[in-house]
Length: 298
Image 1 (spheres, rainbow, N blue to C red):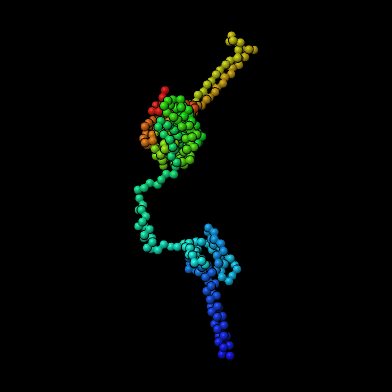
Image 2: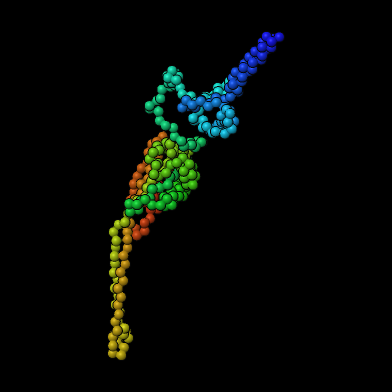
């Protein structure tokens, strides 16, 4: 009887030991394992995952940790699924990717970021803001646009068969494409035509410089008498005055160019005013050149 009791006790103890040995294994299969880039391994439970980080609690603890995804190499979930985050390519994989990717073309030009205006360009004309230089200094943007508007107003009356883009639309399209007078040299004229959706571009520069100064003096004299050469009360009273005036003269010249959408300069001329003027005016010189461009119609 005693031997049966010992045998029973031995069996119970064996099952108890087996149960204790299997518990850690069962616990480990329900854990998430985080392997970091630096080689550290974290065993516990992932509580949440966002775009840039995960929340994690170690086994047997309650404190929640935040781990950036950039620090994680891979995660082995309790379900057995494995997810890689910052897996490095093997040398063999890098070689295979290089062989499959096309070789870069050294002569390829970077694509322009501007938007090309849709529609037919034929017989459409745009006038750009003019350069305006006075005494060696660039004029304000408002003056540049005023010269542009004056040229548009004049040419609009003499452009039979052509369609002129109004200055506001022209300038808006240039701004959207990032084109200014400072960087316009980085664009070809056919590119400017494509941006504006026109066949012809009119552009130019007005230059005004100070010329000579002219001074004049005017003197007058008068005697106070009765008109017969006799003075009042036997006395002759005389008085006079002198006035001086100074005038500043200016020299004005206008450079005008016309380009087409094939990047060709079809007209260029530089004209100076016939006479210096006391007013720094460019209109007469500008109109003189506009009458001679191929787009002008009487």
